Length: 89
Image (cartoon, rainbow, N blue to C red; front, side, top):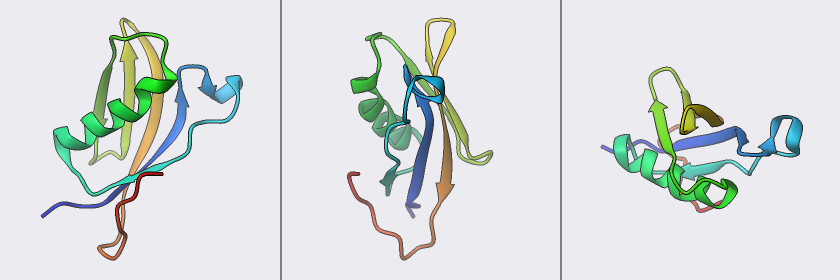
């Protein structure tokens, strides 16, 4: 069964943190690699680097985006109650 997750970004590239507002949260009814791939597709528009990796730990509720040897973003992952629907925010 797929769980719906809300992904809230602290920062992606220069968006969020000290560089301005963070991108809007997203909600996805995906898990595992599919959720990480969806986060990567969303994050791509905010990053200058074409090569980056999304590392996701749903049990810890955290994730990172790495571009080379630097952190290009951070986010939290929250499992939503079963009545939460998926949307493309």
